Length: 339
Image (cartoon, rainbow, N blue to C red; front, side, top):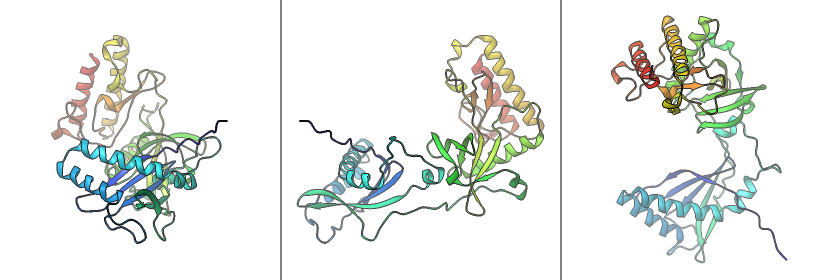
């Protein structure tokens, strides 16, 4: 008679915080629930307090930090996280179970602020055990900022709660995602400590392009709405999600030697025209390069990423965020296209 075992729930390491002679916290995520597991140098009363498993791992982590060998550190972290994942299975099943269809609907609020549970690795009679930290239940995060800077003139854009935005696909972690809201599929860019300056710049550029009323519209993402947290804070922007050519989705990924000359010339003409027209209204693309050009299902080019900056071999840093920088980037894009 055979018995069917339940497959283990899959988790991934999100973050590791440790240092010499300090405690270690390893954060695992399972079905968008965050589990922060503490390895402490001070054993809890009632558990083993000599030659514990957590003590052994902390000593190995000290050695890895001192050696500055990333491979050694990765090996220790992989061992610890593997051990934690095995012994966390009952807790994963209690707090991170999925529905009968094998999937869990995910809204933007839950994606950016996953429920969090604090745990601790302890040793009992020489064996590892994961326990819940005393008096600590599921924690719910908030949106502390930074937020997008908007004015009263921007309030014509619909403001949608993160709870009403469903995540369909993560393009770039939790910074850029394919989402749906109010029956429309869009691209969402999230404002955080790393992205807030770029997204504020992009928002202003796209607003200026929209106000210019180009007819037909330029192939540049159109602002569709704002993602709002609380009464005033805006934590993201919603833009056109471009239906890409599956074979050549991004110009920078194209093997130009396999592309016919008339097709390359068409792309070049389209790119030149868009840059010329945005310059006419005082908008600077910034970070002009082939990787910031998408190719849609109709084989037309789209300029994306108006966050500014520069990339080596495309725009000189001294020309960053200037029309001359755009023109230098354009020249190198045309060279890349071989036209």
